[in-house]
Image (cartoon, rainbow, N blue to C red; front, side, top):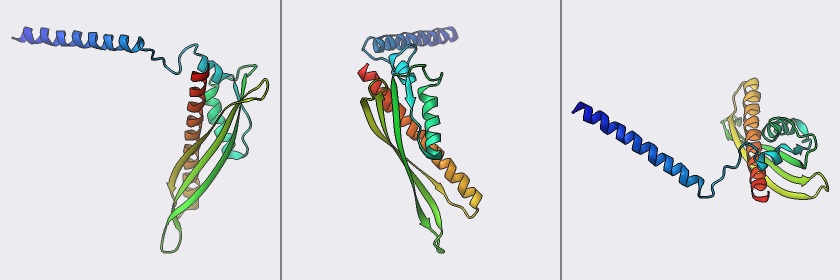
Length: 175
């Protein structure tokens, strides 16, 4: 009885491996292609995109996030595309105490971006990204600065991810 149960478990494992193998084989023959991969034209196009300077400190942080995503191995010597980004951030305070001190704040960051060809400055794609983060406000000023900076950093990271996904989709469908 014990040997039969061991054999039965082995048959189930082999059947599971066969089913998974057939599933992967079927998925690869249906036309599915990963967006990013080795030697992919999407990665090459993203890597040859120069990000224009974005003003103010938040713009610098967004620029750095985008640079790390688009050009992880460094900018190509002759970039084919340029990216301009207009960044706006605003903070709304809510949740007031009886002394009219705010206890909660929300940061809304919006980026309007435009991709253009370096050769003739022709715009080929544009979009808008928005991120909303929030943080608690405390009595201690240092704590407020720290939590606000952290919430801003999270919003800018989310914006860079959204812009990166938009550009990746553009390059995947137009190349």
